[in-house]
Image 1: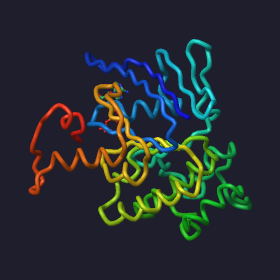
Image 2: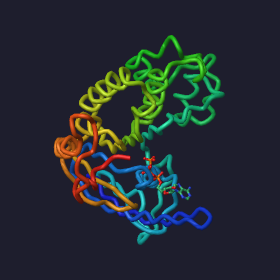
Image 3: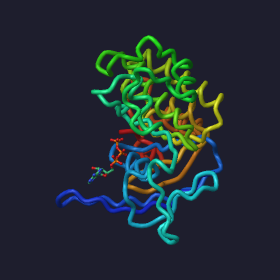
Length: 254
Ligand SMILES: Nc1ncnc2c1ncn2[C@@H]1O[C@H](COP(=O)(O)OP(=O)(O)OP(=O)(O)O)[C@@H](O)[C@H]1O
């Protein structure tokens, strides 16, 4: 279903980071789990077509999005992916309705006199966004921002949904609620998902297979339940990490 072979060296000043991510999965929902700086966001950006690759191949559900050997490199728009960024990536100077419609129809910035396209209307209704359509991102809550960003991502009818820490910006209560909402959404839609998370709870609810990533490479994979069990085994009742063994260290979160 998803096959990634991603190679890119990024450099900043004297620092260099090699992204060498290879994985293949039949699971509909996968998670990338690893410490800060492991290369999770770079991987997602590469899939979305926002990071140029040195070489590699990206195939989703039989569709080749990128293949350096065959000279294939679809534009981000042609990839038709829904990408929910860590900070939601809403445009602050655009209203909610303009944010959702952005990318749907070129030049669809003035909603006056125009009807929201049907596919977007569906998500406005589903996420109960009608009352805030003319508000700006600074005027709505964290949970509403997340729903607006999701509505925008889903309105392109994506062939793959990329979720980069979708719950990280929310407080504990809202996090639980939105996690449930996302899980319900996943079971209603048949869209493959790649989730980035630091939280094993997210993986249990929102993924079927977990790939552990560190230093730009995939270290292995496990079930979300296996991840949770290994994570719990490293934590004593006082919340202190007990054993820095090789395996447990590989699962340690940042
Ligand atoms: N544009 C860039 N130029 C140079 N180096 C970069 C660039 N973007 C990211 N890096 C480096 O690449 C590495 C991987 O970054 P990435 O953002 O993918 O990490 P991550 O696993 O998503 O971390 P986090 O969980 O903190 O978001 C880091 O060392 C980072 O400093």
